[in-house]
Image (cartoon, rainbow, N blue to C red; front, side, top):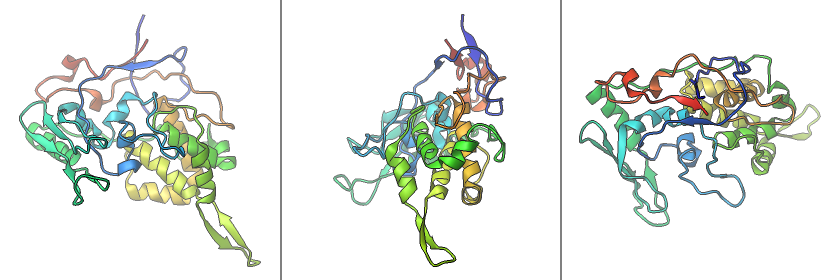
Length: 302
């Protein structure tokens, strides 16, 4: 038997529907453009554009990327385009992508240095793809969502975000690249030592760990991947003023997405979540075709 699940971020994280099993999403031909942000863009990281580095700071793309993450940010446009020439760092091709419903082509661009060791792609294709879909076909971006849990909610992840936030932040860095329950020693050390310093009332110089950066990197990434209704200024303000609460909230958000960061002072992995209805942006097809006729965008538990 096959039971159908839909992804709803406001669902209770602990509403069990049975044994945790693999979730398989129907996939379609998607374009692969380059997104703004380079190596710091979650949209680029989940698409495997960057090879892993020897130190572990760039871990590559893992096997647990939720399919709905490909619709995050400008990514929703990619299911309406196909590749004439896919973006590639190795081949130094900026990419060209044709609309599925007309002859419009969105092209990536190269920086002023041209090809070679200093080759620098410019993420011009995704904004052009979005403008075209809205203006020419009336296809609108997906609606924004709310967080799965509240910022100051007392729940799973709070204790670790206070006592061992460096470890949890490194696990979330891995989770945003599709690696579930994976610790990254290098990111943990980076968050611990790449900070600032201040002088106490006795004039002694003390090191301050980089918790604000850790909170901001993970909050910014999951906000984009989940199309969360939160501006960049609000993200920065929460990361600066409530970094521990933010790390706990993003832990619960990754868990709701099915990519459990894991941890030492957290509970067991949350079970699968029964969802009420498919997100509107997971329905594919040109505007002339009714979403219920498409039959796409469904997550199936096998």
